[in-house]
Image (tube, rainbow, N blue to C red; front, side, top):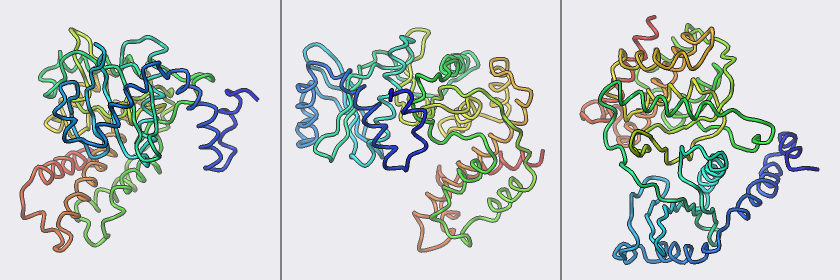
Length: 352
């Protein structure tokens, strides 16, 4: 049976078997094809970082870029080559594997939208490592300041959304946190509240969730599936002249490009955008996404993502003050400020 036919039939199998088939027929052959001759040398540097991170940072060929919640990121220089190394625990390897597959796919198309993958490796069943080419350029340190700057990001997204799946690319994963149905939109929001007791939910959030369930009209999207970016934080864009390159593709994959567009505009890194600014960006993008239900779909996705982020902030706020319910209301913070912004925006849209 060919690899393509296996991929097409993969959903017929139980989860563990499906994962095993995916690894053996898709991931491992791509890793083997990509594996460079200097991989072991790079891995020795990675192991040095893992085993002795403090001293590794004093090495002038190793530079820690950041240490996020999910992984550590380093710049490595070796034999006049520059690489980006992402290191995480093996139980989060699926995120780096997803990024590796998408970067491999993009590099084969030579679209210059992303870094090139060098290799992906699990070390001692403990760590997952993704090595990519280092991208020279200027990392965006602030949100776009005007419409001209926003157009560059919107055009970049259009370049990504122009990529549609074929039978040969069915192996790429579905984009994470991307959906196009009422039930999945509600589930996405509620996924952020599973650790918060119902009696501790703010009344305004409960009220808006009820309004969304009862009154928000969800239209059938019929939007063509496309490649979706997933995480539109402005720090994930590198400027090269007039062009943008995207980094950090951990949440990318096939999905609804309209949801991906709204995810960009609703992201907390752009929380200072007014609703007027958001609707300008949506109006500017509309011609690229022909859909008779465009306006209704966008509203339903905006409400979904505004309430998703409000719920996420409640989860964070309540968990940091679990001994005293609602204590976070008495402690002004950026999280509380953002929560209130998202609640206000969802409220405006649900009033219609």
